[in-house]
Image (cartoon, rainbow, N blue to C red):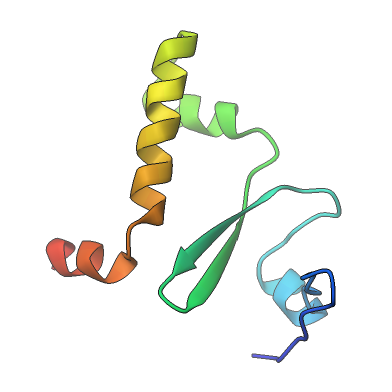
Length: 89
């Protein structure tokens, strides 16, 4: 584990050791998830639709369903993680 600094534009550098442990490419999108007083950064796959199709099958969403799913995911992601973990155990 290494320490990095937040720049004046709130940018951080992903260290080489972290990039080797969790491969990430230049230009790749990541999701930032606030967890209490921490921020979890999760790289998104290049083609998330292909991976979802692998697990969910060939499901087609219309615009309204996509918006509803997005709203639900944002609501879930904005909730504190500790209560979710407590429910799972």
